[in-house]
Length: 170
Image (cartoon, rainbow, N blue to C red; front, side, top):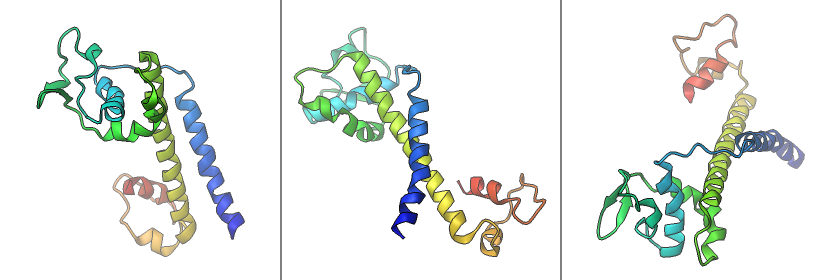
């Protein structure tokens, strides 16, 4: 039983590694101004215990950008803090330093965090779909009649609509 469990995690893990490698292959990150708050928020949370971006003058030295709004004696991002919370573990090693790392390091750590979650979501989705189709079988009557076929899915054989139904569920 244990061998089967280890074997069932092998493909999702390989898929995770493949996506992680492909995402980071070029080491280039398309940098837009809306990424800036989510790149600096983890530092603000770890170093200052705050979600204020007032500590980073390089963000507004040339004028206050549209994504920073004044609120309670500080500048805060108009974007949510969800992505910053997900990136927090990746910025944890920098929390103990005295200064903020270089801008290039921040970009690479942000890209690593994003690529980790993209690869993880692909691996989890693959494992879940694989488990669903192994458990009930893509051609079993329960799987086949659970949902009506989507309007765009022509059915030519008994199992022909399994893949379109899977995507329809997503």
